[in-house]
Image (cartoon, rainbow, N blue to C red; front, side):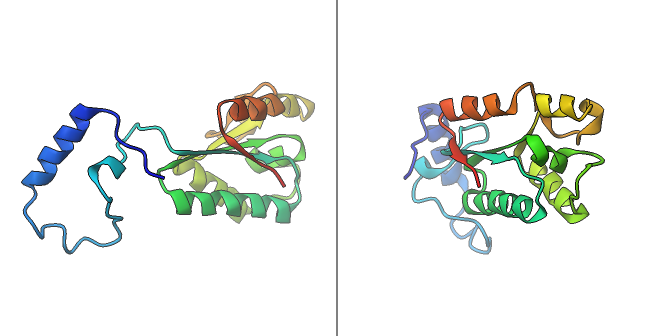
Length: 166
């Protein structure tokens, strides 16, 4: 499914800029997907066509690895054309803890941080944090805190995000 660039000024500008590039200039460039037309190009700040919110609520290492692997797979498939949110609550919140009280492998923590650098949003449940006597200093700096993690899941679904749960 292609989404047309809605701003005709940007479209005309891009047509003009593409006309200035000499033929063959980009011939040696690899690993770049050619757009079928200018209308297929996305500009920085354009909304993503795909939006997904993951529920992460178990502390089982295999479970956490499967969820994080799925997040990475979605990012690889849709690159910059997807908005991904992971809501961690209950025992799953330990994946966002600076010093998790349940086992979370260091490699998994590094993968979560890496995904955040690619734009994946991680949300920690404030209610779960209260039960653990955690505050903002106890979770990784890239995580956002929502008062109620389950409410955040619902609100993202109401915004049109697809809901993924194991």
